[in-house]
Length: 509
Ligand code: NAI
Ligand code: MG
Figure: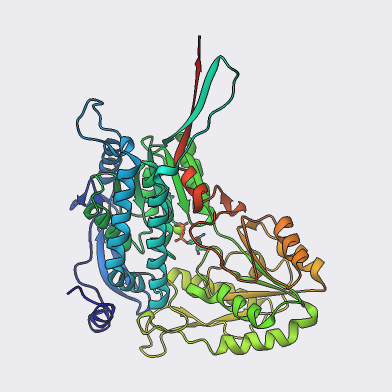
């Protein structure tokens, strides 16, 4: 009998850990015991819900980076073209589908263990971690089903020619991911890359590498050829930077901060490597006076407090029409006060902040705001788990009536902090919503279809949701404009990142 969710939760609650966690980078189908990062002996993995170490992984350096690139290149196309071993890059789409479907089934069977590990590693509530794993299973199935639907076009050049395009895998893709959605963010790149026939190297955030290592092992068990998915656990400045500038990488998918994104872009320029950049946001939830206010209230809370606000597309700004502002805010503050937080395994409304640095960063933003004379209408303090007095938490926080230029309005805080902006009317609400250097996401609550679609048309963002924040799923493309980056993940657009177009034209005599 496989262990149940209750078994894993009980184990994690009594021992603070999960048994048999991976400790080493996964290269060419196996764990690599060496430790060549001269600057870091081992990376300690914290449970943010307790603020204590619960696992350790070896930190990879140059040697492992070279091994991973060699393994991925070899798995992509065996060095000898006449080799009888079939390479992943040359595999039949149906074969790739079979393996990805098998991986989805395995992940479904092992979902409980993955969810508890993600809960400990990233500080998530159990419910959110379970939601993450369910969405990863969908992602694997979506792209498994897409492997044999990657079609080129025929191009009419007149009767003396036959011309067509064919889509080929780009080659080896590098996936640099952050700590807020360790497995979700990784798989939304890795699944389409593998589906397209690419081989991948994952560089998960050093704070949360466990689920990536477990995924690599799971893919190997699902039959993925050795080397087609490698995970290098190391620091950003070390292994991450080495990989980003490596000539053996054909595509980089990066998710993280704008500052690090710029470094990765510079590194990618060295080898003219093409990139997909997902760099966060400061997304508005626009609430107009004619909306269903109960739905808008729940939507606005969900938009900023899900995953403790550590979401690139979090609705971190509430832009609300003046005529409903006061009563709406009163209810919002009441609801925010009623949200419980604490260790994710107990499944409160809100879990931990994933790292101590991030908790401190959120606290700094609020302290600076208080020094400017602003007073949060709820929250505003760093906190610990109310039961154990341990861990890194932050109270659900709301700051009202903010000026459009205030740093709380303009900068990505990445925590449970909602900035409220009051607009005279719908027109001003649109202007405030768009007054940002970011351009990832926007939500609108209104019963007026013209206003909803007008906002969808006019805002410089990659995704708009109407009357339900975070509406959508893996089929819907996702990505940003402006400082939020470029390129799209998810959907069939996500698959296109890993396909390269070749044009063929034949003269018929
Ligand atoms: P980061 O952007 O520095 O880290 C993301 C990934 O990049 C990690 O895997 C890291 O190891 C890697 N990395 C770091 N430096 C690198 C380099 N020079 N070359 C190649 N890879 C490198 O994010 P960090 O420092 O963990 O968080 C800083 C801020 O970024 C947060 O406070 C938050 O505001 C924002 N952030 C945004 C996210 C998003 O989804 N848009 C996710 C996580 C953080
Ligand atoms: Mg960083």
